[in-house]
Image 1 (cartoon, rainbow, N blue to C red):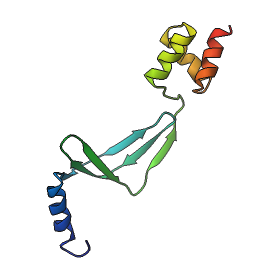
Image 2 (cartoon, rainbow, N blue to C red; image 1 turned 120 degrees about the vertical axis):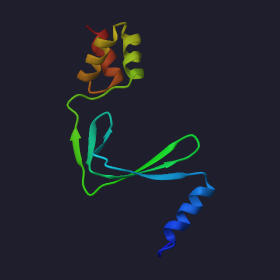
Image 3 (cartoon, one colour; image 1 turned 45 degrees about the vertical axis):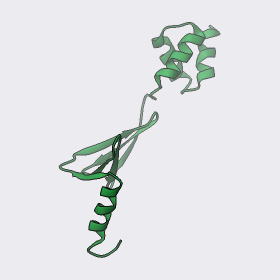
Image 4 (tube, helix red, strand yellow; image 1 turned 180 degrees about the horizontal axis):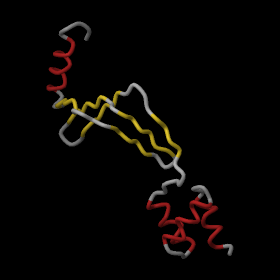
Length: 114
């Protein structure tokens, strides 16, 4: 797929697969968040490939910044599980999860061994 015709070949192949490819214009930043950190990508090149029922985003960056989160983000499932197991409301469950640094069993123990 090298040479000047490569891009045209790629487009033809993508058309056959039902993919539509667009470069997003003027993207200022992309932020990827995990439970423990976020990755901030400034001024990336972003391409969207649309299929029938989903999109694939390709993010190309010269550089990025990684930031550890002060407060870990917990899933609703984790919070509900701790809440149910310990018999407390979701606020208390979330606090216990923060104190236990995400360890479900430890969070439940903190709440029940009081």
